[in-house]
Length: 204
Image 1 (cartoon, rainbow, N blue to C red):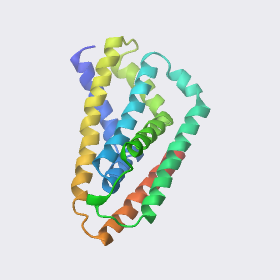
Image 2 (image 1 turned 90 degrees about the vertical axis):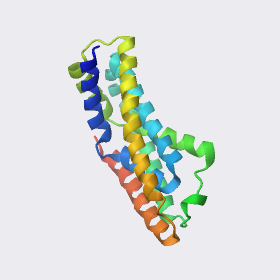
Image 3 (image 1 turned 60 degrees about the vertical axis):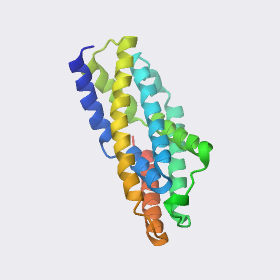
Image 4 (image 1 turned 90 degrees about the horizontal axis):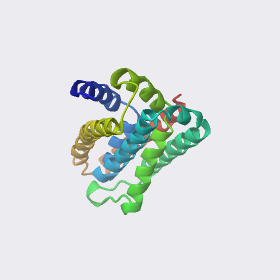
C-alpha cells in the first residue's frame, strides 16, 4: 500500500470522523460535565469500535457483522439508553463547580469507555462505511501489514479529532465558576446527550 493510498484513506476518514454526530457531541458533553478524562474515555471507546469494524471489513467478515442484526440492535439500544440516562442525571444534577466534580473513578471511566464501544458496534452505518470505503480507496485485498497501517492512520486521525473536541470543551469548562452557569451548562450538556441517544436509536 503506497503513501498516496494512505493519504486518500486518511482524508476520507477524517471527514467521516470530524463530521458532527452523536459521538462528537457526547465527547464534548462528557468533557464539559465531567472533565477531559471522561471525554477521552468515551472517545477511546468509539475508536475501539471503529478498529473492530476495520478488522471485520478487511478480512471479509463485514457480511457476518451485517447478519448479526439482533446483536447490533441490542448494542445500539443499550448504548443509547445509557446516553439518555446519563443526560437525565446530568439535567437533574446539583450544580458543582468543575474543580470538585468527580466521575466515579476508574470504574466510571470504564463504563463510559464501554458505552462508546457498544454504540459504535451497534451503529448500522459503520459496516456500510467500510464496505464502501475500503474497496474503492484502498483496494479489495489487504494484508496484515495493510490493516496495521490503516489502524495507525485511524488512530492518528482520531487523536486529532478527539483531542480537538476535548481541548475546546476543556477550555470552555474553565469558564464555569458559578453554580448558576454550571446548572445551565449541565442542562445543555444533558440535553445534548439525550439528543445523541435519540439520534442513535433513530439511525438506520
